[in-house]
Structures are given as structure tokens and as C-alpha cells.
Length: 287
Image (cartoon, rainbow, N blue to C red; front, top):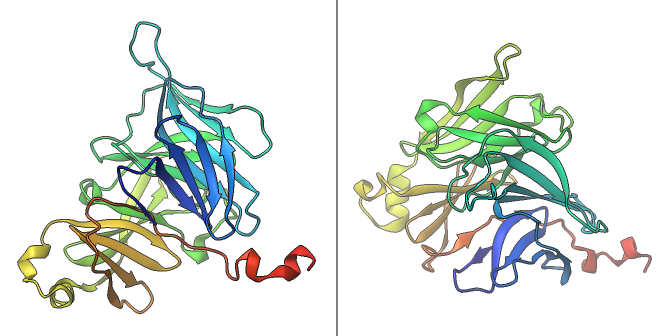
């Protein structure tokens, strides 16, 4: 899904068929299920500066979700507090609840979007050298250093089935990126009890430079810059190259061009929905 800069609502996150939105005027939040035409309005978080949002949504029940906000408060002198806190709001709750505090000011990258894996939410920090993680089960913050080859690249966090640990966050952290026209997967595992990660590249695909050039009828040289990872959903990697949206099926490694429309100014969120949707499955509602 994409949202242009002139729309009254801004996309913040998209998860399991639900979309988290923010009204540009009132700052009100909303969680919408586009297929069911349902929407839940939420009050804005009580913070001087909300710097990041994340949506944790149930896989089937559209009424079960949590919205997380990473926020910074005023220091009383017109500046920003040295602390960063996390707040959460669920349907039926009357107010936001503070769940975690980090002793330092965490500067997220501009328009940083949440990534989610292993029961945690991740946001990239300014400079690209690290990410901040919030474990949604224990409500604990951690700052993780990224491997040097990935620090100036776009990426997404992914889960690998054989390492799932029930959402406790104890398994390796996997990052998927596009480097040198190749899809790469990096694994970060804890080194002892210090909380630091040791990184290793665990997978690398064939090079896609000629296939991309043929698909776009361009020269190979045009693809040396500007390939951005949009996200990974249900085994498909979505990429943007300037004004073009591409996808790679990670099982077959098939490359596709998804649109001829100019998407250079759009906010694009890969969207996966349960199937069949509720309105096509009346048996679930006692019909």
C-alpha cells in the first residue's frame, strides 16, 4: 500500500492485514482493516515528540492488536529529554501505558518505519550503524550494532522457521538486504552474555544486474545506485529503484516488475492479508 505526502492520513505501519495511520492535522491514530471496512480510532500518545510507531497485530482476529510508540519528552527548557520511552495502547484501553525507558535519547532515522521479527520491533538509528530493539513480550530496550557492510544499506529483518523460539526473542536476528545486485542474508547471534551480536553472512543469491536491466530496458550501469529494500512479506522481497517497484520471490528467485506507475514519491508498505477475509467466510461469524 502507498500513501502520498498530500493525503490527510499518513501510513505508519502495516501488519497482518491491518494498517496503522496517523491524521496529519489532529495527530489522531487509527488502526484499519481495509478489506473489512473497519477502523478503530486511538488517541494520540501523550508525548512532546513521537519518533516511531509499531503495530503488533493478531494473525486472525482483527480486533486484537497493540500499538507501540517510541517517544521523547521536553526537558522543561524547550529542549528534548535525554531519555527515550516506549508506550503501548490496546483496544479497550483508555490511556497509553509506559512500558519501557531507555536512559539515552535514541535518534531514529527520519521517517523510520518499524521492522518486526522474533517478538521484537526494530527501528534504524541515525547514522545507520545500529538499530534499537523493543521486545514486545518483556518490554525491554536494546541497541544492536549492525555489521559494517550493511550500515549504509536498506534492509529488513526476517524470521527463519528453524530458529523460531516462540516469540521470546532469543534466536538469531536475520537481516535481508540487496548488495552488489545480490540478495544477502546476515545472521546476528549473541556473543556470550554481553548482549552484543556477532554477525556472519549466511546466504547470498546470484546477481540480478542483467535481469534488472533487461526488465527495465536500461543499461546495467543505471543500477549501481538507488536500489532500496522496501520490505519482505510472505517470502517475497520488494525493492524500489527510483520510480519503479520490483519484487523477488525468495524461493524461486524470480524477478518481477510490479508497476509502470511512478512510485518515487509514494510511501510503500508491503501488505499481507488473511485469506479468505472475514466477509468471504461467514461460517466464522455463525452465519
